[in-house]
Every structure is written in structure tokens, then in C-alpha cells.
Image 1: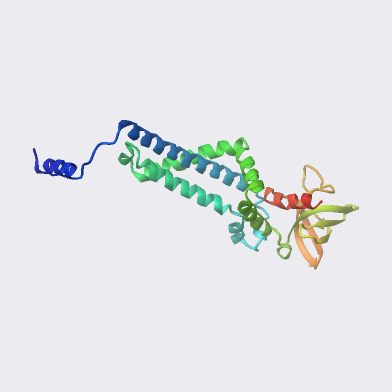
Image 2 (image 1 turned 180 degrees about the vertical axis):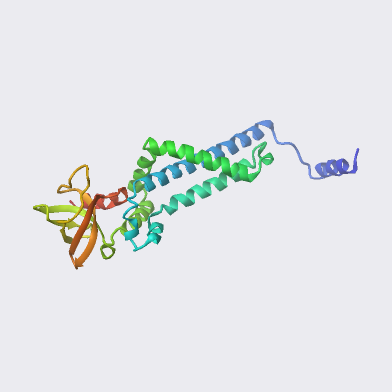
Length: 242
């Protein structure tokens, strides 16, 4: 018997170390895989919601929010990006504690987790499950609703040529009255505006007016675009007020 073996046996006897029952080992192993699967699934859901927000943002008018390309940082779904990063980190740590996890390099686990999250997240986005979950969180979770409202406020940028709102009056298709969701009514000159090609705007539609503020509550429109999904919260506020 080698010296190392003798030392190990002596330590086992002195500390009265006993092997754990097989059922406990199996339960621990199953638990680790369950946690790994949960982290991967939650990360995939977060990825799906990220794809949903990116796909429903009108990127052509985003630069007007703060007057430059750095405006893009205002509309990114940071909370979900952080969730994806956290879930991939947890999945990597959990997998390392599975039976054969120590044999796989962390970089490989991270790569697999990212690819799996993208694939499953794309499926959740394509099936509209991610959209439904985002709406459910907004309706049921107050902190998340507050977070979304903060994101929506950045679209209120008339000084930069961006006026979102609801059409409440149309005068011969040249002068509109727009409710900007904050209780203010804007008079908008749409004489030279470019309209959506598929369907002309109607009273009650939610739109984003691109143009120039000419007075405290007067706006000269260059174009009229359908309101992006991020403004759904403003729509809900108006419906509740009515």
C-alpha cells in the first residue's frame, strides 16, 4: 500500500467519512441536470423576448430619439440581455458539477449554451410565446411594467423630431390633432408627409410622426409611421383612462 493510500484511509477513519447512499447521489445528479435545463430554458425565453423587442423596434427612426447613432443604446432591452448572460453563467457553473462536467472546457459549455439559447429563443419568438410572456409580465409584475414605461418615455422626443401619439382628429388630411399620451394635444401639419404604403392612417390609429417641432404644441410632419410595439404601454394607459 502506498503512502498516499495509507494517508487517505487514515483520514477516512479519523473523520468517520462514509459514502453517501446511491439514491442521494442519483437525486443530486438529477437535480443538477434539472437546474441546468432550467437555466438554459429561462435563458432561451429571455433570448426570445430580446428578439421580439429587436424585431418590433422601428430602427429607422431610433436615431432621432437622442439625435444620433448613440440613440440605439436607449432602446436595447438591457434587462433581458443581463438575464441571458446570467443564465449562461449559471448553466456553465451547474454543468461543471455534473458527473462528467469536469471533462468539458468552460468555453465549450458557454458556446453550446449560447447556441442552444439562440435556437430555442428563435423558436419561442417565432411561435409568439415570447411576446405573450412579455405581455404577461407587463400586466402582472409591477417592477417590469415600470421598467417598460421608462423605455417607452425615450420615444417622446418632439425636440428631436419624433412625436408618438394617437390620432384623435383629421381635418381634410392636412391638419391632425395628435394625443401624445401625456395629455397634450398637438396640431400636426401632414400636408407634405409621407404615409405608410399599405394602409392610410385613420382616427384612432397609434402612430409616430417624424418631422419638426415648430411651436410648443405644433408639429410639421415629414412622415407618418405605425407606432412600434414598444409604445403598447402608452396605448394601454389611454384605454384605461377611457
